Length: 202
Ligand code: HEM
Image (cartoon, rainbow, N blue to C red; front, side):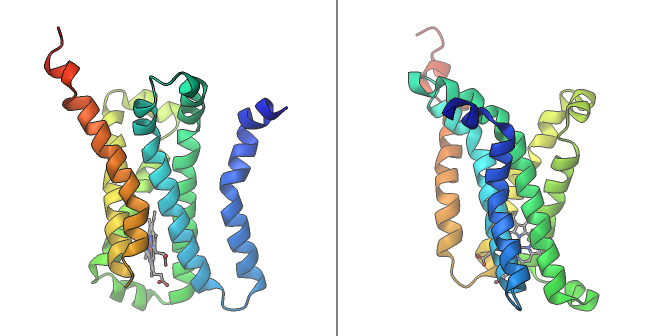
């Protein structure tokens, strides 16, 4: 029973949609809730992006652990859902922003500020990734897909700086991205500098 619940793709999708359900319920039941919607959707978009990026280094880090073997594939199979969720939360964030500003002039005016430009660049990168993350596009792009995938790092860096600069309090952005920075440093070390790579015969 528990095994089939854990394996259920639908249940996993419901779990990652839960924050959206809660924030939209609050938005429609509380007057003037667009500020809360804007903040929570931004945070959840960032969290989903961070978790999506963390999947590969976590799999590398724990790959020799026996207990982790079944979870490794479980995580890998859910990576695309997490990436898509990040994009959908970012769209919700954009929707809340458009509702709050409700004037094209203000939106264009804010484009002179780097923190807003970073938000738009992050969203554009996530849009390209979302459009090209289906089996047909991946098959069609062949080896070029790997290059397209690097856009996820552009998105993550832009989101980090967007968050850092758009809020007075830098602590939440730093706390969210610090674990990812550590995991990415491990991944780089693993791929390029671990001792067995330097002395393959040893
Ligand atoms: C479409 C371009 C974007 C615009 C115009 C935009 C706009 C904003 C604004 C106005 C805020 C400040 C909210 C407030 O303090 O009331 C904000 C915060 C934030 N945004 Fe964006 N954003 C954009 C894209 C993104 C994307 C793509 C992400 C993540 C994937 C993101 C993540 C965040 C986060 C984490 C915060 C801080 C939320 C908080 O804790 O208050 N934004 N954004």
